[in-house]
Structures are given as C-alpha cells and as structure tokens.
Amino acid sequence: MQPAAVALQQELPGRVEALRTAQVRARVSGVVTQRLFQEGSDVRAGQPLYRIDAAPYQAALDSAQATLQRAEAVLAQARQTLQRYEPLADSKVISQQDLSNARSAQRMAEAEAAAARAAVQTARINLGYANVVAPISGRIGRALVSEGALVTAGEATPMALIQQVSSVYVNFTQSSAELLRLRRMTADGARQRIPSDAVAVRIVLDDGTELPQAGRLLFSDISVDPGSAQVTLRAEVPNPQGLLLPGQYVRVRLAQATLGGAALLPQQAVTRSGSGDTVLVVGEGNKPVTRRVQVSGSQGANWVVTSGLQSGDRVIVDGFQKIQAPGSPVIPVPAAAPASVAAAAPSAPASR
Image (tube, rainbow, N blue to C red; front, top):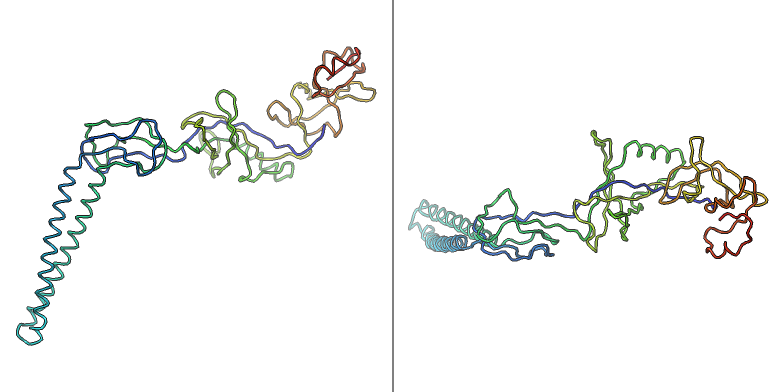
C-alpha cells in the first residue's frame, strides 16, 4: 500500500441537451412550393430549407418601386420649383409666402420619397423571407410541413428543428445534503476541493461504456429544487461521434474533491460487517493478520480507505481459500504477478 491523495468520484444521473436549438419558422405567409433539405442531414447557417410562393411579394416589391419612382419625380419637381422661386423672391417678383410654400412642398416630397424607399426595403425583405433559411448550423430533424402546405407568419408549429450536437450539454443533479457535506469537509481541511474549471466530467452510456472524451463542468445552480432537494449542474461534453443525443439518459462521473493520505483497495480485499470493515495484512513471519480499516467511499471497483493502513503494508486481495488456518504462514506473491508465478511457488499455503 502507498497512501496518496485520492480523487473522490461520484456518479450522478443526467440528461443530454443540445448545445443550441433553433426552430425553423415562416416569417411570411404563403404556400410551401419546395423543400430543399434532406431530413436528418447537417445544414449550415443561411442554407435555404424551404421556398414559399414568392409571387405576391414580388408584386408588392414592384408596386413599392413604382411608388418610389413617382415620389422621386415629385421631389425633383419640388426642388426645381424652389430653385426658380429663390431668385424671384430676392427680386420681389413673388411673395415670401410663395417661397415658403415651395420650401414646404420640397420637404413634403423628401418625406414621401423616404417613406417610399422604406416601403421598397420592406417589400424586398418580405420577398427574401420567401426563402426560409437555417438560422444556425447543426443537424436538422424531420420536415414538419410538406410542399403545398399553407404556412403563416408566427405560426405555432415550426417547419423543422435544428440542433447542434457536435458538443452537447449534460444536465445532472446532486443532493443538496451531499453538497453541504462536501463543503463542510473542505472547510475543515479533511478534503481539498477541486476548482470547477479543473473538474473532469466523464459520461457513462446506457451499456456501461465510458465516453472517450471528457467534458468540463460549466456551473452549479445557485438554488435548490424545492420538490427534489437537488442542485442542478451542467457540463459541456464533446460529441464528435454523435453518440450522445438530446434527451438521452446518461450517468455522470466526476470528482469534486481530493482526500489526502488515502488508498485505493480492491473491493474483494475488504470484509464489511456490522462491527466494522477489516482486511488481511501479511504480518511478521508471513502470517495473515486482521486489520481494521475505515472506508470512506468507492471508486469504480475499489474502496477508498482513509485509515488503518500504512505505507508498505501488504494486503491480501486474492487467494483467501489457500489459507488453511488462522495464524498459518503464507507465501505472498504480488497481486499483479501472472498465474504461472503462483504455480511455481512451493506447495505451502499461499495467498495472492
């Protein structure tokens, strides 16, 4: 045994959430004439997805442009009139009232031309909305409307859903009591808390396999859910292979604190009972000796032992059936040694 600082891992339930989600909606009303994407494919921001009948909006743009031309013609006439009136007013040929009326007519013509230009811009925007494009890059789901369907601006039902899953969020919960106990222990110095930006988050899938890519802890919620007494945490996890899907249930492994002077011991080496936890240690004369230990938790297939063992102790982790009687000497061999090493040992009772 070589006691050292051990990261205390926890396994918590979580749900996968897309990094970004966008609903594709119509911004103008009309009949869908064409679908331009393949369901389940990756799309990029700005890529055309649907076409809506653009004929009414093209006509509206043409009408607005004609109105603008008329307004610009009226403005040009008003400017010419003012240019003629100004020298005549200086020569007292016309009254100041006529000059003021000419100036007012020019300002009104300028306002009409500005309104007409805004109407052209609005009509051009509406015509552009007849091409429904992807608001974000990501993976698009199934088409929720088909060709020939009538869609309206602000419709409750979206046309499609795009989700970014190259990286995903994993939302998981932790008991508020466990979080409080962790904070108290770190305040007492029994444990050292790991900074949030240094916490490695591992994801365990439904079949028990662990995702190769580690995520990072983003934040811990500042409030406790009154219904479940749980605190919500969020991690961001790379998902290059697309194994994580939004809404999927996963298990989250992370270490929020380290425990100094502890040791990891295979679980089969510890005998747990109501009177306490014990292990067999190879003592003087290679005789097994029962030693009481304190277990603080588990980490995978190991127990985290916080007291009862010292550096250099040899703990029996296998071969208990070879101990003939209490106090009988054994021939210890390293647990990592191959089976052939134990077979070559003398036939005296041995423990691996």
